[in-house]
Image 1 (tube, rainbow, N blue to C red):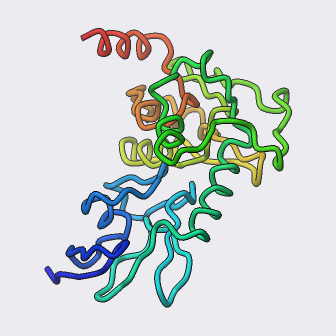
Image 2: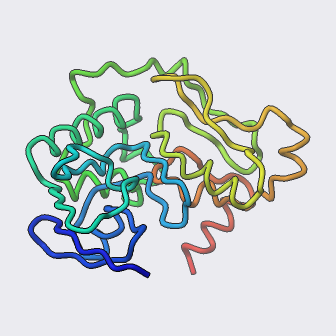
Length: 226
């Protein structure tokens, strides 16, 4: 396997060809914020936009989608990079329910952890308008999982893991813009036949958007107690 040498924040990094910038940075213990990255995914989603970096000669790119190249020079903390990351972060929480103390995933939420690492506050951005809660009700159609669109950051992790386990697109996104939300397959028979009710969609969810119900909730509590 061809070896690649690049520079990330003035640090020489050696990795193999095909590695994404984000993977190379994390392996070299250089932190780049991210929420939608999945190491096993063949096609990176790049939805959260938190992993923006500046590559000399290219400009701003998402680190989870661009493979490394010999001689590449990457900057992860420039003023421009930090500005676009803050904007991406604001977009993630603009419609997010920020009552963390009442949330079942409080202190286990990846969005909270990221906020602490990048030293930003989890508060409603004044320059963004939230969507009225009455337009985004809880989805309780699945007996094992409750979907809360006000907690969803549209990272795509649940869609990926569901497709990987079931081999069918039982979960997907519907609508566009700030009305985008997760939906079950419209083919109810397909869902009934293919969904193993494994709860992995809730496991990979970085927030409290997918909450286990019934037997899955009991299994989770038992695992935590153990």
